[in-house]
Image 1 (cartoon, rainbow over the protein chains, first blue to last red):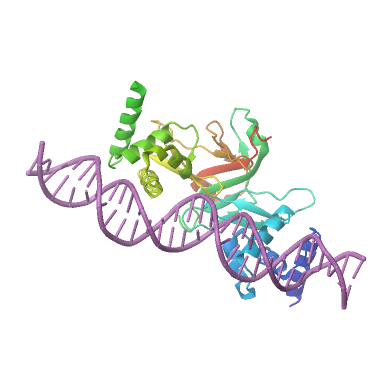
Image 2 (cartoon, rainbow over the protein chains, first blue to last red):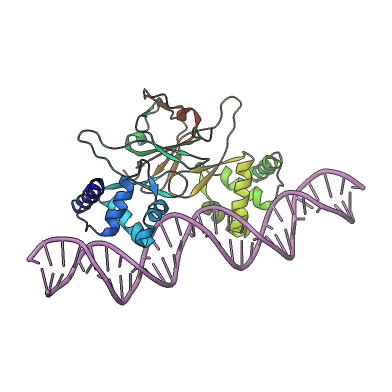
Length: 143
Length: 143
DNA sequence: ATTACACTTGCAACTCTATTGCGTTTGAGT
DNA sequence: ACTCAAACGCAATAGAGTTGCAAGTGTAAT
């Protein structure tokens, strides 16, 4: 119960300090994302919120708004569906990590402990401006 | 003209040796992909074929069939649209390379000269089974 | 060259993700 | 409490991709 209240207030504060109105739909949306370890699709968020009878268009708009305010991140993991996750800002390192998605079961993992670096001899400047890295393959479950 | 004939025959042979029927739609589809440096979406392929009046469902099915036969590869680059490219098999090294897509203009590049390797200390077995790598960011044009 | 049949195709209907217009409701500063 | 821009619900829309089915066609065998 105390946990619930905290989560509620945390979400409200997060939304308000982003310059958005703390509506029930937004608070609920943020709480759902906060309770998940991996990025969620719009459909998954909507399902969690079904008992609140929040319109899917509203969920989409809220997710989009929160992305625009840098509260959450929208990632495209390659299965043609957007996924959303809360940006965990820490003082000195930006929250950015590759994502892994299983091409068999569709499960998604955040690869916080993996870093990639270029071994090529080429000097393509493209690499300096990479904003997102997605790895696709087969997860342990699907072998 | 000679080039055209060669391309036509090349496509026919490629399709036949994959165990598929060399229909006009399939030959035309393969020729379009063969003439492109970067992966094309279904819509782009369809547009190229519009004068032939080939149904979009047919194009989808043919692309899917060619993927199943390992003639072309289907990549998901993160803008929620499938892209297709011919697999250039060479004798000793498999044709596999990361793709780069510009989040601004949507342009796609094959990064043949770039290789990625893990620098993490973790021993996650996931990395051994990576089948596709996608990098998203801003291209030179879009700065 | 003809035939037969499985493979392909065209068409239409459909699913799913995502977006947009608009009239109504509501959060939050005054 | 009042006000109004921000947010919402609802419905319609757009585009990618899929599927069922009847008609058409490539290809191997005759």
